[in-house]
Length: 354
Ligand SMILES: [Zn+2]
Image (cartoon, rainbow, N blue to C red; front, top):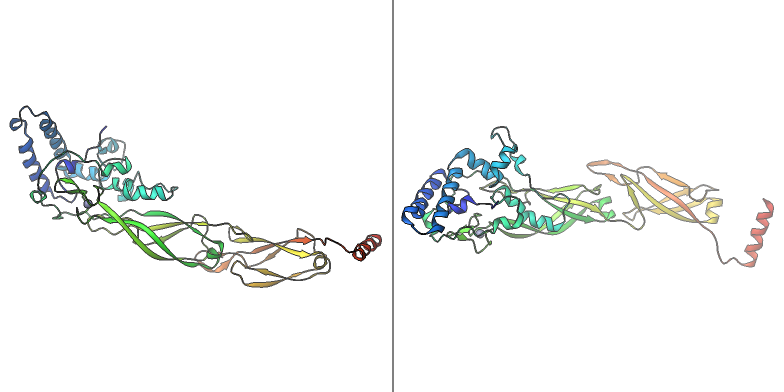
């Protein structure tokens, strides 16, 4: 089923008032009426579309559902999406929202395509929804009062999720990152309608939004882990009709570390010690991911593979500044090699003593 943009058909911005819709309908219906367009089947077809569009946009309740659900609203409405205006929370309409598992491609889609379907008709078709040129109607924008902006229904912008890789060191002590993000803002040339002078907007290509590259300084708190979402308020998608911008959510992925394995709040590492330290005991130096060093006392006759637990030397716990996990240090004994003749004889003697 073809997705129809009733606003485009009526040559109106989405912020059109009831009065705008009424007068646009009257004017277009007169223009494309079959009586004045005899033998012009295209005009007749368009006349039907105009009536269909007015039937929906001219009815407050239907328009609301159409705005929320897109041109498939009737089917979705029956399926239970937003069936009652009063009982539905605004958020429940974002049914074809950003893929939370997606990478940058999905984010891009959500900025330029999918996320617009919440506020623009065109269904779940993604990026193509905003670029449908619609019926070719040639009129002047001034006829319709574009951008007058009456009856705005402020809508908060979409949240945008974006992956961010951090090192274990950053997760351990927190960091400040400079990020170049690619967000969007409403196109000023068409006021976010995607249409200008009855044609697809040349600046935004009908999307209603334009790229908004921005440099951001983001604070990564200590203790972040895989899947932690760091919220950057107000850096998500643009709001509609004066609504606030959504948030940027940075989905953290902690990169593997050569020396430490993280298991929840705990850190696991390995310490290599000599045979002599293992047998006679001694002090060894263990480093934290931050680089700070501390001494670990190895008791005499420590077995290979023995694990020591260092309490409160693990990862910090997110949002609990005074909590830390533990560090587990596994001992690996290095056996001497390239023995001299004298050493070999001493080991022989040791063996005989046993
Ligand atoms: Zn535009």
